[in-house]
Image (tube, rainbow, N blue to C red; front, side):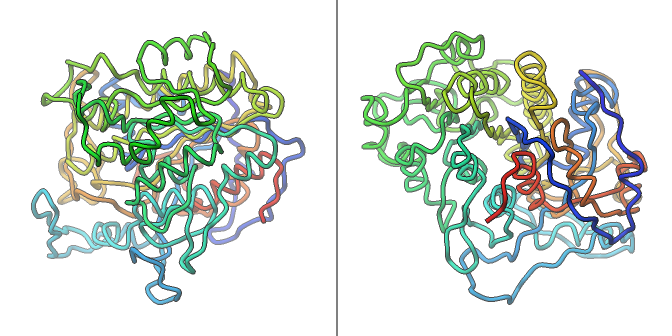
Length: 479
């Protein structure tokens, strides 16, 4: 791929200065946002070590922009507060405080020692995936649990709506349920992420997306086995049994796709759908692969396509649609089960899920270079928040020591410091039309040297800036 060199002059920013943003001279046709859920920098590295035996070989390692991102929510309430009380503040320098502490964090998997004040800071006031998705999609901080819903108890306009209003097509792909927090953040609105049925109904009945693909199939279990008599709750991820039946009967805006073979055909460019819009439920109620039986690798489910396949399918259907072909599209792709593996401190499965995500990024890059161009398309690769505070094996005595490479095909040596989300600074990569937007707004943070990254990556943006980068690339004004 074409490798743009990072602009050192553009990165020579004062530590707290934000330069005026210069709008795109020519609007991008397409924006592709790829989110690996619940991932810190060492998760990215663990996958690279296992896959390649070294760092620097992933496709996003060639991207023009390589920075970090803050992810904290507005507050940690689960409902609108209509108040500034409890507003979360963020000071990046606090993350690197290596003062020893004797605190104990009580997690669902057991207790974790605090070790350092910076670790304790990272483990407090963290976002959930709903508030994070809302920030990425609307440019607004909100309370935890909100799906494009404000702390004042009002719906927020998300980038999917901006996309469709601009005449472009919208696509959303996830390796978990289509109404789960992150995909829902680009498709729906709800005061609570847990109202799966209402979110599912909005996804189907709004007809907003041209493509929506995820899991949550009521007739298949977590092992991809057929369920003859699903219970009422099994239909919740797609809006209830009545909504599912309308999908099956062709009574919605969407052609319904479910088999691995059909997804693979779409990814290969064999597009012969009865309707222009497509909704796909992979034959699994949980995840593509993470929740399958067994302890580690092998025994992959034959019913589940890869995230790369789903990405290719979505790109082809979007590009073949009337709005997509003429005006372009916005596509969000989520590797959602990375987060599930982090909650479980499951190193083999988190590496497996991250590699699946990395291959999806490769599929997107290949599509751009074969079907579009970097002058027309922006790809952003990031996560919604950290999870697990994964560090090196001696990170109990050396703060933020990196994981230890054991070579390709071998698990790196690590230590987990949490089994839930964190507010650590997380990686962000961008390439293509409008990527320089991130340079214009980045803030310097010398503490990022602790991550042993290049000096020109010692900068961070906020998660709300991803929304604005998308609008800027499209040449759309924020309302």
